[in-house]
Length: 209
Image (cartoon, rainbow, N blue to C red; front, side, top):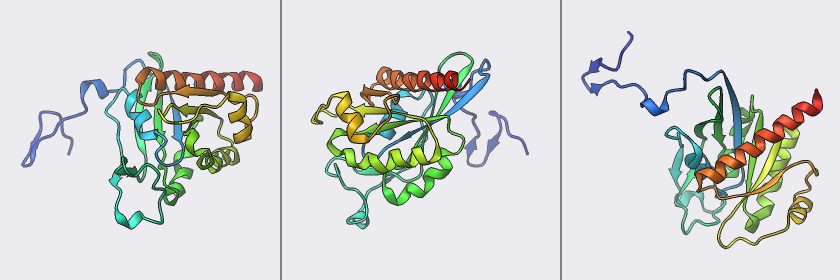
């Protein structure tokens, strides 16, 4: 049976998506982008700040059962963790839409990454300079799968600031990989980060042509 927004069930009225969540009729192409990083680096925050639709999140409350298993950095203020993915959408133009997939940060959920990477055109690697070491495996997985990426340094207030060349050396990055600073809480900053990725992907495509 097909239901319209005016159809009713015993549990209430069936409604469709909000008007602002409907894909623009002018959209002609969609690109899948993944936002990756370790636990607590700001992936859910970035998807939520930049998405033009209500983001889908799969956060669950952190419990005592995770002690000794999960990364608990920042647990004094962070009470939930992503267990599957975050999802959002942003229109780059009238014709081009980006679908954003945020990966879970806890290592025991990393087996889900392979599915999230499937079909992705590129990735944003969010890093926290207080814990650069959690980014090593993240970058390695992207390189193994051949997914182009940029580095976005999330500006945590108490995080140390490092020159770009020092970060590039510490992360063992190719000179061509862009490194940008961002504030994942701010829509404009997150959007600019995504645009840096799109420009980088465009340059790679031109180089292959």
